Every structure is written in structure tokens, then in C-alpha cells.
Length: 273
Ligand code: HEC
Ligand code: HEC
Image (cartoon, rainbow, N blue to C red; front, top):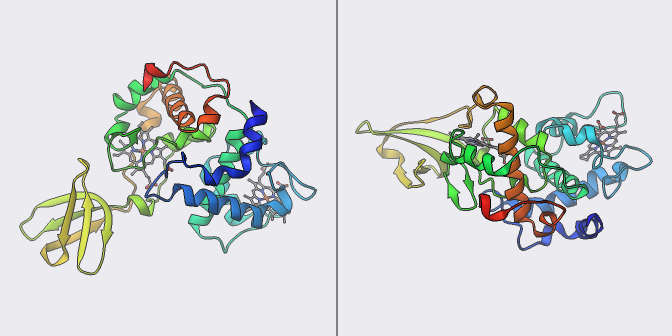
């Protein structure tokens, strides 16, 4: 099974089943990530990321697998001082993100990690106590304020997913920037900024509805500086609930990728879909 996954590694970008993860950019950013990895990283780390003469492997490397996405991004942007790992100051945050995403997809093909918990109980946390579904879509069910997580777990290691939940980004992702608009009548509308220009702004509220607002009708528009994702899940959820939740996210993600899903997972699909 591992052999099949490895052979397919080169054609990841072209998969029609690879649903875009956010704002329709998912598939392209995979292709971008693959290209950038080949041009910026492969010279030292090897084309498949398994290491070369000048640098260690970053795919089967357990330390890199355990790093959060933001730690890896930091290494790419800042380098590792006094080693052969250079800083890539010229890469934009989107380009770094695309490289990390591609690196995660290589890591995901490396091995199907055993699930840390129970996906069925994890689904209950996602739609219940955790209230994740009030903001995140999972296979067409859920809210709009955060990114769709249906493919999020397809290639990421469990540690990096739980890290994203317990230590979420402190800086808003531009695709999910929130704002509160106050109209001249005093009505307040808060939602994600889906579109804006000099004359209007389009907000999507938690219920999914779009609001087209003319700037001339607004008293003010306040952009939120922090992402909407709560920062207290480390306290709110127990270790076991977190493991179950991560297992649910991984199993849904693996199913979004047919060949990764067949990699030795003993799941009863009907139970949690
Ligand atoms: C000029 C060669 C070179 C290039 C180009 C390069 N690296 Fe590195 N990289 C290294 C070396 C050498 C190390 C080991 C540093 C050390 O000794 O800790 C390293 C370490 C790393 C680590 C940490 C590994 C660990 O085990 O802690 C990551 C992650 C990484 N590189 C990712 C990348 C990515 C992604 C790119 C492309 C954007 C890249 N590198 C480009 C040479 C390179
Ligand atoms: C109030 C809305 C809200 C709730 C509730 C919420 N999230 Fe989030 N979440 C967000 C937003 C918005 C982002 C994007 C953050 C940003 O701006 O980078 C996000 C980001 C994430 C990410 C990173 C996605 C990526 O593409 O980088 C994960 C994983 C995640 N949330 C999982 C969860 C889980 C699991 C729960 C429930 C335990 C949860 N979230 C609850 C709004 C929410």
C-alpha cells in the first residue's frame, strides 16, 4: 500500500478529487507548493524531501512531522542560524504556506499514522461540546466563519492538527477576516469580509447569509485584529476529547483522498459520516 502511495506522489496537484480547501485556492496552491519545493528546497533536501548530501530529510523526519505548520513556516522564512539552512526572506506568506502544505502532503503519503482516538466520539465533540460546526464546514455540514475542514486532516500529522486547535493562529488569515459594520441606523452586522471596494463591502454572517453594504450607509466598519477561532480549547476540552476530535478530522480527510483512505485504516464509515 505504501508503494502505491509513493508512486502517485508526483501527480498530487492534478487530482480532480482534491477539493479546494478554501476560497477555491486549494488545488492551485498544491501545484504552486510542489513547484516551489522543487525550485527552493529540493537542491538540498532532495526532490522527494527525503534528504540529500547537503541537508537531512524533512518527510520521514519525526521532528519535522511534530512541528506545527507555523514552526516550519518560521524555519523557511528565517532559516536556522549557523547551519546550512538559509532564510527565504523573499517568499510571501502564501508561498511559504503552499510549501508547508506540499511538505505535509509528502508526509501524509509517508505513512498512515494510527488514529490517536475514536472518530465517532470525535464527531460528537465537533458538532456538540466543541461547537466547531458553528464555524467550520465538514462535508457540507456546518458554519461559514472558518475554513472548511473536510480535507484538512488528509495529510497532516495528528500533533500538528491538535496544535492548530489548542494554539490557533493569532493573526487572521486574510481569507477569514472579520469585521463589524455599524449602519447609520445603528444596526450592527458582524461577519467575514468576502469582498470590498471603495464603495461597498460584502459581509457573510454566521448563518451563511451575504450582506451587501454600501459604505455611504455605514457609520463605521471595524476590522477585527484577532481571528474568530477561540483560543481556550486547551482548557475547554480534555486530552481524550481532543484526541477523538483529531481522529475525526483525520478520518474525514483520509476519505477525501481515496488512495490514502485505503492505507490500512479500520473504520466503519457509516458510523460517523
Ligand atoms: C542550501 C541548502 C538548503 C536549502 C536550499 C534548504 N534547506 Fe532546509 N535545511 C538545510 C540544512 C543543512 C538543514 C539542517 C540544519 C541543522 O543542522 O539543524 C535544514 C533544515 C531544515 C528543516 C529542519 C529539519 C530538522 O530536522 O529540524 C526544515 C523543516 C527545512 N530545512 C525545510 C526546508 C524547506 C521547506 C526548504 C525550501 C523552502 C529548505 N529547507 C531549503 C539546508 C537547506
Ligand atoms: C467562532 C468560530 C470558530 C469556532 C467555534 C472554531 N473555529 Fe476553528 N477557525 C476559525 C477561523 C475563523 C479560523 C481561521 C483562522 C485564521 O484566521 O487563520 C479557524 C481555523 C481553524 C483551523 C486551522 C485551519 C487552517 O486551514 O489553517 C483548524 C484546524 C480549526 N480551526 C479547527 C477547529 C476545531 C476543531 C474547532 C472546535 C473544537 C474550531 N476550530 C472551532 C473559527 C472557528
